[in-house]
Image (cartoon, rainbow, N blue to C red):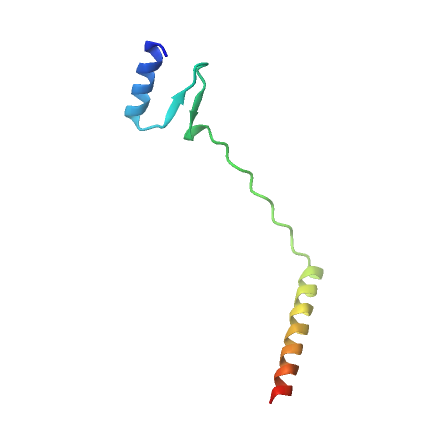
Length: 71
């Protein structure tokens, strides 16, 4: 590591960044991280909503029927 890189690293450290220069001069550090793309949420169509509601209703019916038997 030559004098230039040493002084550069000192300046960078003084500023509070966490960057290290490789021998080829590329920066490695927290500032080089790429942001992950957010996945788009699928639009909920009425048919899927209805399907989920039907499942819930069926489960509730089963539960209420079994609780009636226990009484």
